[in-house]
Length: 178
Image (cartoon, rainbow, N blue to C red):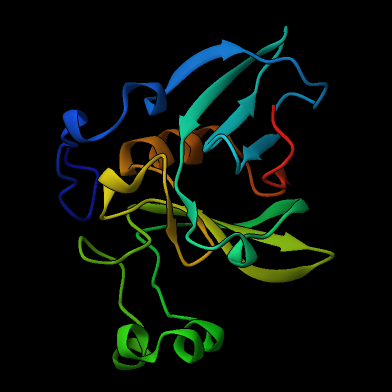
């Protein structure tokens, strides 16, 4: 479209279960419009809209439930084509995968955060968890990340454009579902 700094490849939708494709749905819970609710167990993120509706996005979550953040947070920052750096915990947990990347990667087509990121904060502090794009769209609907919430790049761009900094983000534990 001429606006993007980097090329965003088309997603092979045959590699994603159709139930994880973005769509507007009825929303039964009582969050305020503009809130994002992450259902880690069902692998969906919802952007709450008015009149009992929500935009639902398929997601990937942490490959181990212990890696996943839960509870109330907020979008304390946003970035287009964000830089990425593994946390010290990621390097300690999986040095073969992350040690060589300790200095991080600049934003771009190979960056694991993809095209956009929403930075999750709690009580004024960065949690180091993100809602972000992915270079592995086939992982949507699975437990695949190091703890962050992945969306296909086209979906994180859509969500990014819809929510301001400060938006409430509620991450449900795996045993609580929308």
